[in-house]
Length: 185
Image (cartoon, rainbow, N blue to C red; front, side):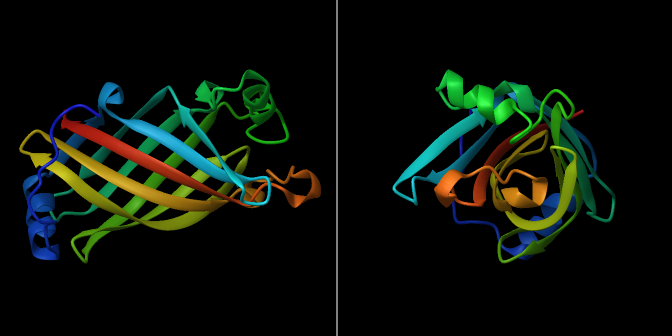
């Protein structure tokens, strides 16, 4: 991520409420300064498979009352674990089924200040399935025309029909890490 991260203490809920009111308007994701990564424990938790998605886009809206909504669209075919054979398998119908479902879509339906962060509600769509999730997003950097947030969420991949795991060697849970830089549009 480019840009600086404020090293001051995390904002409290009243600070975040003020940031939201001041940030009313439309925001666009800066893909060059944002990233989406994932981690899955494998070989009975002995190793962790790390990956990322190289193509993402999105936008968000903050209403005058501070209500937040937005969408992150991830090109599922852009996944990269630095292992060509594994990436091909992850793109197949055993996992993301990119031929029929080319995008992973995270739709944020709401966010409220909580404990110096944003408590978010969202729907995640992948491989033709969807799941409602709650997660926490932390503001890493904020300026009048740009904000960077970091969120970590855990998804049960079997909810999306991603059940392949011979001898149950792969964890059913995947951790997603999103660092999003949004600029006022």
